[in-house]
Image (cartoon, rainbow over all chains, first blue to last red; front, side, top):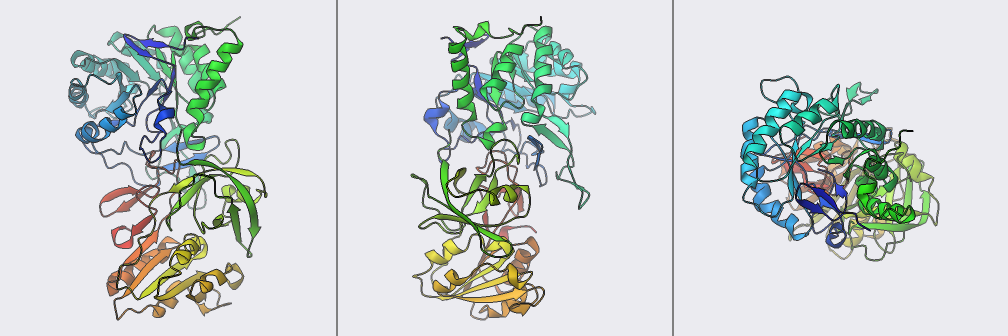
Length: 302
Length: 256
C-alpha cells in the first residue's frame, strides 16, 4: 500500500500532518516514536521579532469547536531557529515551518534566514496577517497574496505552501494568485472569524473581542472550500479544518486534498493524528485502494 | 502520542458537602508521582460537548488520585454523572507545583477559598513530617459549603474558618483570618488558591509583611500542556501560561 505524497520534489511517507500551533513537541510530553509515524509536522507560526501575544482570555469553547485569539505569541525567528528547531529535528519527522510577517520585507527576511537549512521540507506562509497600510489581511486580497508569495518565491530555496484564510468571498481566487506567484502547494483553511459573548458580563469571551473558530464545527465549510479549490488550481492541497478522525480526513482527500492536517482535535484526543493515519490505511485496505493518489479528488458527482 | 496521556478508572465519585464532590481515580500505571500543585486535564465526556478538557488540581495522590470539585458549569455537571468503574481520559501530572518552604520557615499557611482548597490536601500529606506551625485558613460563602477538613487536622494543621454569612467560623471573607499569620517574625510561608480578589489580598498582605507567597491560578485552558498558549496570565515578565509555567506562581510575579 502506498501512502506517499509528493509536493514538488519533497516526498512524505503519508498524508497526515499535525497543524500549526496544536501540538507540543517537548520531550516531557511527546512520544517521539509515535510522532515519527506522521507525514509531517507543522510547528506553531513564528515571526521575525518576538511577539507577546494577545490579552487573555485567549480561548473559548463553543459548540463542537473553539475560538482562539493568541496573537502568534512567539520568541522570534532567531530564538526559534537556534533553540526550538534543533529540538524538532531530533524527532526525525519531516518538518514544514510556518512563518508570518507584518510586511513583505519581513517575509523575505524570514525566508532568507531559512535558506541555509537543508533539512526542513518546506515553508508554510501564514498569510492571515495584517499588512501595514492595508485594511485587509494579505490572505483576503488576491493581489497582496500574489505579491507576498512572489517575493518569498524569489528568495527562498524551499518548497512554499501558501496558507489560505476562509474569511474571503471566493477562496479559489486567492488560491489561483498563490499558484500564479509560484507557490508549490496551498494549505486551507485557517480559522473562521468568530465571536462568543458572556451574557452575564456582556463581554466577549475573548480578550481581543474576536477570534478564529476551529474544530469539528467548521469542517463542512472547510471541506467545501477544499472541493472548490481543487477545481480551480493544479497545486497540491494540504487540507485542515475540523479533522477529528479518519472519516473526516478521507472526506477531505476525496474532495481533493493531497495531505491532511489534524489540529484542534488533538486537544481533546491526543491520539487523533495517529488514529487518522491508521484509519486511512484501514479504509484503503478494505476498499482495495493501493495508492492514496487514486483516492485524492475521487469525489463522484453523479 | 503524548506520554502524559492516561486512562484512569473511577473508584468513586461522591458528594461530600452541599456543593463539593470528590472524584477518586485509580492511579494509572506509569502515572508520575505528582508534585503538590500539579493538575490533571480531564476529558469529562465523550464527543465534543463540552469541547475542552477540564483542568483540576490534584487533591490527593495516595493511595488514589483524587480531585475536589464543585458543579460550576457544563463540564463539572458532566463529571458529576460519572460512575464508579467508568474510564476517564486524563493528561497529567501537568504544570509546576508549589515549592517547599525554605529552611527556617516556622509557619506554613494555606489560604483557600471555595474550590480553591483543590491543590492542598496532597500538600498537607507531603508536609506531614515537617515540624512547623501549620495553619489552614479556609473561607466559604456559608457553613454548609465547607468540605470535610479532618484530613488537614490529621496532618497537623490548625483549621480556621470564615463564612460570608457568618454561619460558621468568623464572619467575612478569608482575609478576616489573616491575624492567624505570624507576620512579625517573617518566618511564615503562604500558599493560596481561590478567587482572584482573594489571592490579590494575599499578595498585598505578603508584600506588606515581606513574606514568601505562592498561588495556584486558573484560566480557561485548551491543551493543558503549553502548546496552544491559550491560558495566558499577565506576569511581571510578560504573558506566561497557567498550564506549563504555572499553575503555581510566586504571587509577587503576578500582575492582578
